[in-house]
Amino acid sequence: MKYSGVGGQAVMEGVMMRNGSKYAVAVRKPDKEIDVQVFDYTGPIKNKKLKNIPIVRGVLNFVDSLYLGMTTLFHSASFFEDEEEVKAVEGMTEEEKKAYKEKEKKQENAMMGGTVVLSIVLAIAIFFILPYLISLFFQNFVESRLVIALIEGAIRLGIFIAYVGLISFMEDIRRTYMYHGAEHKCINCIEHGLELNIENVRKSSKQHKRCGTSFLLIVMLISILFFMFIEVESGILKLVIRLLLIPVIAGVSYEFIRLAGRYENWFVNILSLPGLWMQNLTTKEPDDDMIEVAIASVEAVFDWKKWQKENL
Image 1 (cartoon, rainbow, N blue to C red):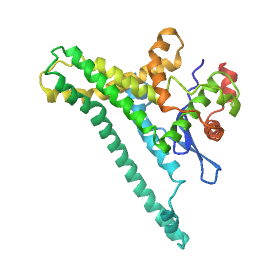
Image 2 (cartoon, rainbow, N blue to C red):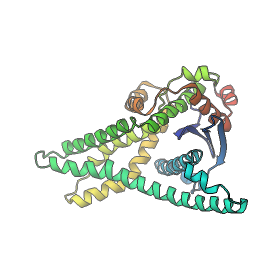
Image 3 (cartoon, rainbow, N blue to C red):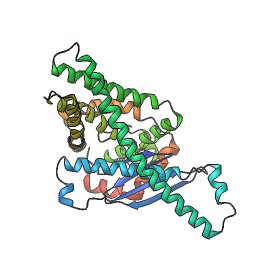
């Protein structure tokens, strides 16, 4: 299987696909029509050499993914305005509507920035600080630093898996997981040399080695290895070092996911298995309408026919 370079994520009733500096968001609107919009995004860092440095590029890619994830989520949600928002613009002049929309946009940007910051803080608190604090209890019974690190890692993994599994019972999240499956199926369809249509996408796999779910799971696993080597007595200093290592762990995890996406061999495939198993929770089989949305998103930014001709 050849690496296509196209990737994406699910959004509210839709799919975002990114190819280089362009990304497309396709959303199934309430009237059942598909809205497709293409945007340019190069990120805050323009230095190409910096963006190609191993580990560093992983951290930058993670930041980009967070920003684009929130941006596309707010974009897709804008198609599902509640009744109060619709009534708010009724009877307004065009000038008043424009001023209202500008105000809404500023509020949306502020909310998006706040959401990103809050999401990062909560993720660090729940998946890194909380497991560490819980592991302190076991230090009363276990002397081995290695065993304590493994216990902390097991707690972290348990919390992560439980979180992903529990939110899948929410109807909106379940539908997002179905769009997530459609996204993977489209990429697998292309990379396996099949024509991109509903029938071929439907029979393609909903698991993919370059998935964000796999990335997060690898972060959890690699953090166990990194934290094993922290040899300081101060509990506060241990926690500070853990927090400082998070970007490094994210960078290393990105390099693994990048490697897994580019190479096919037994060793890489075995290391990729935990992430693929985890995707059984975060991807669901999509219906044909969802597949149609994902295909529209792919074709807006990626000439898959040309790519297949040149690479397969």
